[in-house]
Image (cartoon, rainbow, N blue to C red; front, side):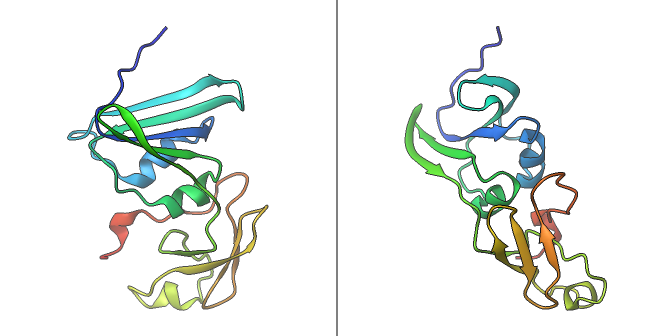
Length: 156
């Protein structure tokens, strides 16, 4: 049995669909040379069968909308002094900015560098979003083949 110590201050992202923990960690762009990170993959879960869990020490500012797109059933626990101070159940966001990349080569976001990628939810169950500019529809459910934009790609 593997034992992972508790963290004093930071976040725990729990109930991640088994196999998506690495994708979430990639998107968050956590510097693993500075921050202590534990990625637990395919842990036994009484609720889901299997799940991933990510623990990140000394980090509390993360993009909850992106988590809702990648895996809307995750729970984020904010830890202070080894105690859960706040628990946030993630949902599918209604509007996202600079998280999904439009696939339409004629979209203004493909031509105009720096144009924000803005999408609006049109189907919650299938996590389908429509581009604000060109009406391209992108589904974020299933194979996760659509590109999630990394934060460092934009000067915010």
